[in-house]
Structures are given as structure tokens and as C-alpha cells.
Amino acid sequence: MIHVIATIEVKPGCRDAFLDILRSNVAAVKAEKGCLAYAPTVDAATDIPVQEKSGENVVTIIEGWEDLAALKRHSSAPHMLAYRDRTKALVHKVSIRVLQPA
Image (cartoon, rainbow, N blue to C red):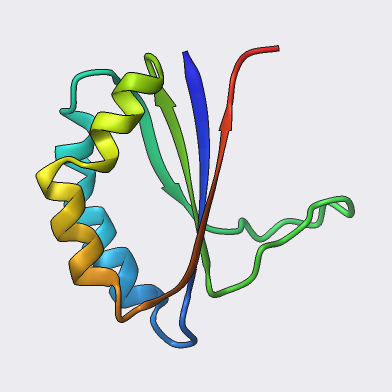
């Protein structure tokens, strides 16, 4: 199993529009062979002093995949290509961290 932390920084004022498109794509992603988890998240409001917040323009997706091959298939799936096309005007920057169990 591998874990992915995908961080998407959207342009100011675009988070709600981005989240609408992202949420409409979640079911298709979860149906992919090898997808174990796919959860879009935003900062939680807490009083935990060590919490590092990403900011109001950041969406983080917590993902789990059976293996690297499943993640690679995901990145080129037709619904992901369409999703990227629909969101490209809203997104400023994307980065991912691919992790394995320690």
C-alpha cells in the first residue's frame, strides 16, 4: 500500500468552485481499481497549538492506493484528465507526496 498527500493551492476566491468540481469526481476515483481511500480535506478549526494550517486557498486530498501502478493508472484515467481540464483555471499549484508504510 502507498499513501498520497496531494496539496492543491487554488487561486484566491476559487476554493468553493474547485471543491464542487472535485466532489463531483470523488465517486469515479473511489471506483478505480486499486483505490483504497480518497478524501478531500480542508483545515479544521481547532485550538490545538501545534496545528499547522495550510490556509483558506488549500485543499488537501488524503489518498490510499494498493500500489504505485494503481496510482499511475489514476493519474491518466479519463475522469482525471477531464477533472484537470475543468479545474486548471482555478488552480495555482499542485504538489504530491507519495509515502509508504514505515
